[in-house]
Image 1 (cartoon, rainbow, N blue to C red):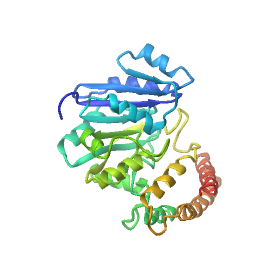
Image 2: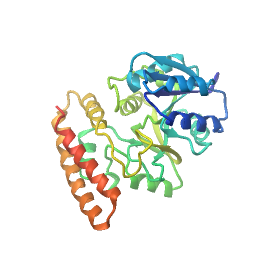
Image 3: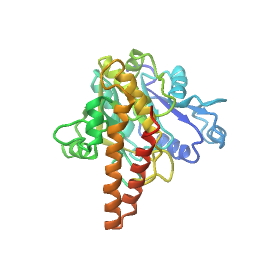
Image 4: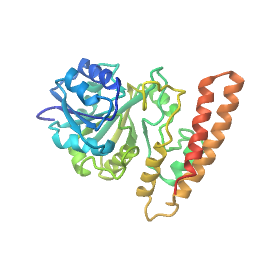
Length: 318
């Protein structure tokens, strides 16, 4: 890689204090090459751009008057970026390991066939965060995920399961080939980004990273999950945790990618996408609810609530 080694792209929208923590940890990271930070603020109303301009003058700030979404904001930042590698970093993704970026860059340097790498994402309590990587939304992966069989018998679901991540760690943290990586920390080779036409996406929020990863695989690039690197991700708010309440909006983005990837094929109907998942979430809600009461575990009770909400949200998909 030549020129500026790395461009870090951050998109904010009412990021609160998270962006302060994110930028301070980024600044403290041991990055072994020149880098720039470009932050696009999507018309925050909480003073985020003013605070960034005042407290982090080394960040190139682009304060927008309208919300362009995650993909739109990153596309704007990419147009200004000069790096041979591009790191998408969420404002609620915290580099507690100061060598995380350098280790990811080293893997990209050593493997020219790899277009993107991503770490193991964790909650603040250290629990693995399902959704940090996964496989192309196809009828089979939907069924595997709905049945709770991801990672069992060699089956691949929509998401890399906790058992798959743990197995990779036990095997020494060897990289895993996946179809997509979470955009909370997504390191891309600039050449690979250019090969898929940049960071545009039909999704406004949620699902863009799944779309990008699948398009990279279509273009012949490998997408590598690096379980040996851990990055804390609050997943939408400073109160997030392994048992916290989650928004169901991620299902809209995933359904949109499913339609895109299966257009013209059998079983491409949104009904096929939603029906198995509704059954799966309902069964998980029942199991978590019973376990939460028997074990007096509030975190399991919260997960049961999440599962019920996800199942209910899928009824609205058309």
